[in-house]
Structure formats: C-alpha cells, structure tokens
Image (cartoon, rainbow, N blue to C red; front, side):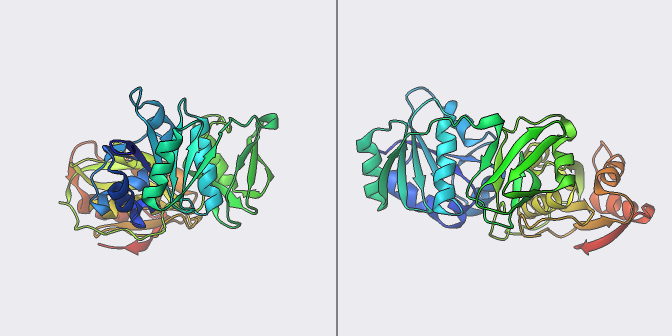
Length: 342
C-alpha cells in the first residue's frame, strides 16, 4: 500500500505544525523531498531527514522516475487554498497525484489515483478520501486567478510582492505595461517594476501565492566565523541557497522584503546580513537576524540603486565581514542604520 512512496513536502507549515512526523509514521515513505526555500529552512530546523529540491512541486513530480507514485504533502492557509494549490500542481503534472492536505484532513486523489491506495492512506492518517479531476483551466484573455487570498495580505508573483489582496480571489492580466489588476488586488508600482526588471513575465505560468512566507520565528544559530566570502542577493531571496555555502561569512540583501526573508533564513544558518531597504516592507516573515547583522535604510533615492552601489564594493576575494561592514557604514552618507545587531 502507501509504504515506500515518495512524498514531496511543500511549505514550512508541514514542518512547523508537526505534520511531517505524523505522515511519515503513518505512511512509511521511502523518500521525503522538500520543495521550496522556506520549507527547506523549516526542514533543516526540524532535523527531519529530507532531500532538498529547488524546483516547484509540479516539476519535482514530473521528474520522478517512471512508475513512482507522487504524494504531495501540504498545509494551506485555509482548506480552500490548500485544495486549490493541489489542483494547480496536479493540473501541471503528467501523472496522478496523491495530495495529503493537512488543513482540511483530506487525502485528495487527483486525476485517477488508485482508489485503494488513496483510501488506505486516508484511513491510516485519520483523514477523508476525496477524488478530483484537475483540468488545466483556460482563462479568458490569459487572466490569472490567485485563489484563497485573505484581504490585506501580500500577493507574490515569482517571489516579488506585487500588491495586496482586497478579496478572496486576486485576478491579474497582462497589458502593454506588464501586469494590470482586474479585480481583488491593489497593485504596488515598485513591486511591478522589480518584477519586470529582467523582462516580460508570462502571468499564466508564473509562480503566484498570497500571504506570509512563514508564520513561525526563525531559530537563530550561533554566528559563523567572520572571515570568508560575501554573497549578494538583489530582490531574489528565493535564490539564497544557491549563493551561500560553507565559505559564506555574510550576505548583502537589497530590498525590504528580500532583507526580511534573507535575515530569517540566514539567522538559521548563522550568517549575518547587511540589509539595504527603503521602508516599503510588507509583512512576509518575522525580521530575525543573527549577530553581526546591520539593516540600513537609504536616505536618498531607492534601495535598488543604492543597494547595487554598495554591492559593487563587495570584494570578490575572501574578506572579514565586520571590517567590510564598518568601512561601508563609515563611507556612505546616504544611509542610516535602522537595526544594529553587531
């Protein structure tokens, strides 16, 4: 039955809420794959043995070996958003998907899963079994619906906050300027600008979500040794793990939300950050950071330009983090310290 299955765990909540231990004990999976940046942080903090994959869940599932059953583990903000997430993943896959949704205590069998395996998994977990078909929705004029929003919360496209929800469903559409609001969302001009910085975005295929990236505080680790290489993250916190390794002594993060996410993840890794912000932060995650960190706000211009200017002073060779931070603060007259954890 479910023993020996491969489970793709999505989002930090399945680790923070303890779902991972319960599901593993009940289903005895052969392998646990973690999809997502903040999920990786939560998994590392939990100490649960997992393999990490930077791809979205649908791509992880599509690249599983032939004949391997796909089991998606998720805890949505609400039962409705959890089911919608499973539908989107299943619609993008080329195989049946078993979806364990902890927010509603349901095992969804998407697109023709084996009824006996689905029902046996539900029985072991104490969940209900529900069978669904996830067809790709062809939406008029290429609009994109982001369902399961809570009014007031941030809405992300490809990891960038592009606005705030005003209804349960935010509807976006492409236009000659990039993206326009159809309904249910108030756009943030600076966010759209950052999103389109590297070219046009296919809104029909983009990664979209709403709400905070993690509700639990980071576990702050002891600071690493202060000498090594400095990484730079420019408005793309989702790329952080690709830029840090055992030689990293600090991270320069550009952007308010990027600084919040980098600070959270780097706190767990014991890496201090130098965050360059301009005061337009959204509440995406708690503002944790480890000892040695400094967050500054620009007093002239915006964090985009000033952050890149500061990034240009980062040595390519190994250096001492505290010395570089002190020198940067001494020579810049267009920034002020808003948080000092040295």
